[in-house]
Picture 1 (tube, rainbow, N blue to C red):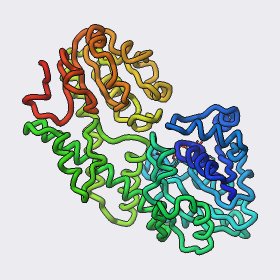
Picture 2: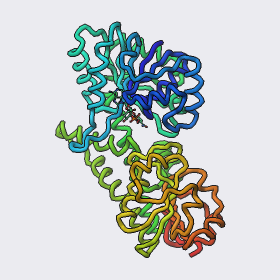
Picture 3: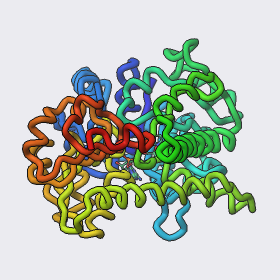
Picture 4: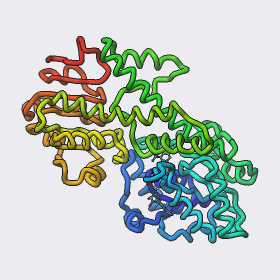
Amino acid sequence: MRAAIIGTGYVGLPTGTGFAELGNDVVCIDKLTEKIDMLNDGKITIFEEGLEELYQKNRRAGRLKFSSDIAQIEGADVVIIAVGTPTHPVTKEADLSCLFEAAEELAVYLKKYTVVALKSTVPVCTGAEVERIISKKNPSADFDLVSIPEFLREGFAVYDFFNPDRIVIGTDSARAIAVLNRLYAPFSPKTPILITTRNSAELIKYASNAFLAMKILYINEISNFCEKCGAKIEEVAKGMGLDSRIGSKFLKPGPGYGGSCFPKDTLALTKMAKRYNVSLHLTDTAIEKNEERKLDMAHRIADIMGAQSATAAILGLTYKSGTDDVRQSPAIDICKELLRLGISLRVYDPKGMQNAEEQLKDQVYYAADPYDAAANADALVILTEWDEFAELDFNRIRDLMQSAKIVDFRNILNSRQVEGFLYHRLGCGVHPCSLVNS
Ligand SMILES: NC(=O)c1ccc[n+]([C@@H]2O[C@H](COP(=O)([O-])OP(=O)(O)OC[C@H]3O[C@@H](n4cnc5c(N)ncnc54)[C@H](O)[C@@H]3O)[C@@H](O)[C@H]2O)c1
């Protein structure tokens, strides 16, 4: 089949590459010409495990092409829109301007029956609005506007493309379903394909993300309680997760949720509901508590460090491991608060340095590696769960530091590694483990 992807970012590039790998002819389109030039030159634009190899292979095979010219969608059986839908700076709703712009631009190139599929995360009824925009611009266009929300996890985008938990197709058009069944045929019968109304498909995405965000907040709350009552969060989470109604995922305490999806999608969901005079109290509380969590983490670090003119070595800037994405990363917010409190920062991340620099500018020292970050620091603070941080030579780190303190907000270190340090982790009761070796 011929597929066109509009928006070649964290979703569009793995999606386009995945469909090319499945034997389709794919063109990935983006309005950023520099991005397209890089991709045409064989330089991948994002880090995702396993993506580069597939991208190079399919590009060389001629099944995966890149263009900044939207006219290239002409002749596609399916046009998938995966442009960004960030938080609008004023209304805090999903900003749909890029999406509407793409719909306006693509309309005139629909010259045969085409399925136009929205993969961007969009509020309920956006599909209907995009349908109107296209029909107005090109009244003779023969198309169906379908919602196919995306559930991939950054860091696992390639794995998730080939192994999705479910595929949701929101449409009542039998013709569109037939086309998408062909596109998704390689996933069947392993993956459930759920056909819903377009509105339901749009809401499934938001409802799922808000639920996961709340799960993270819940375990963080229980983790706080563990610290006071002497329980251990890992044991509590394990005991909870073995209940099949709960499940073990998203039960790790951390410095708050982040990334390009949960913060913006929880906000967009509550704003959307308000338009229907519905209050989503749990989601509202989640948003508020997550902001508090990040500030609380920064103040904990400051308290542990004591002196105002202290220096912290920050390990991890991305919102989770396996990605170079720092959008809405708790680590970045924590860094900003620490800077506001007068603490100097020496920061390191295996993949996110370049993106972090755009946010933290010249206010921090960008270290060459974790040891460089630790040099003369008063505390080592782990904010992202990169495996390599658990493999460091902690004797060397201790010798380099001014003061042997570790703050581990991802709970990735064990008691042997932190011997000789004053060690703080999340969700471990005051006695005996929150102040190991103190
Ligand atoms: N990142 C994730 O993990 C994830 C997961 C599921 C769903 N989503 C949703 O998918 C959508 C895309 O997210 P992303 O993280 O890939 O965003 P992104 O910012 O990485 O990529 C979006 C791309 O769209 C391009 N673009 C914008 N307007 C365009 C236009 N008119 N024509 C052509 N290109 C245009 C941008 O230049 C950018 O490269 C969002 O709605 C997001 O909520 C993201």
